[in-house]
Amino acid sequence: MRKLYEKKEILFAVLWIVAYCVIFGTIKGNLGVESIYSLIALLVFSAGIIAFVKANHLEEKYGLAGWPKDTKKYLFFIPMWVLATGNIWDGYSPSCQGSSLVFALLSMILVGFVEEMIFRGFLFRAMLGENKAVVAVIVSAVTFGIGHIVNLFTGQASFETVMQILFAISWGFILTMVCYKSGSIIPCIIAHSAIDALSVIGADNMLIDWIYIISTIVVAFLYCIYLRKHG
Image (cartoon, rainbow, N blue to C red; front, side, top):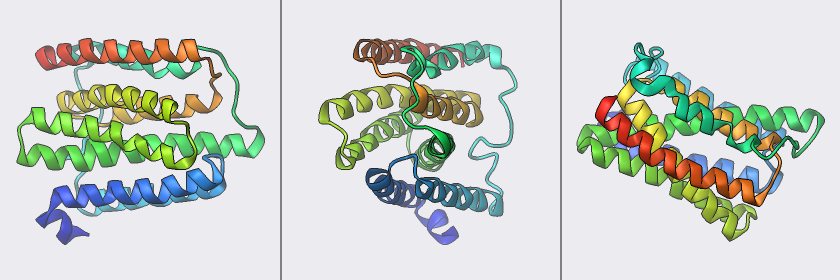
């Protein structure tokens, strides 16, 4: 793994993304995110990422060394924190109960960590090392969004998947810009985990969902312009 990382860092990142999409996507599609097997798979991915980063002393490179020092420059991340609550704007209605709910919440928290590390960590930093920042940002954000097309193969309706892709691309730009400008991936992990975890307990209202999606697109556009100029 170390040799592949040193010689072909982009390929290293892509393989992580493919493995995650295939393995977790299959388990999620067949058993659901509330399954203990989904949680186990995510724990394995998380442990593998942490072990690799620590063994190679890459905490600083991937933004895990600490919290951004001057959060005022990023408006205290308020736009990101507000949007992160969007999945409960239409109320509270858990998709499952009991131990299944616990497994689902823990799984979605880990999804936030794993996806941030492979998209904003591995892929973005690999792209940044070989391309201009604007290319790295676009590739990371769009790849993250397009990656959600895997939901088509897990039984999710095509219309819902399109909505999720648009939503994810917008979030991809926010998270990538925050990670790039602040030098820390930690705020991104927290926001991403919150979005996914709240999706498990949020109600489902199509009108509110569209409001959330449109709000995310608009805020992503404005916030990213701000970060580019002031971050």
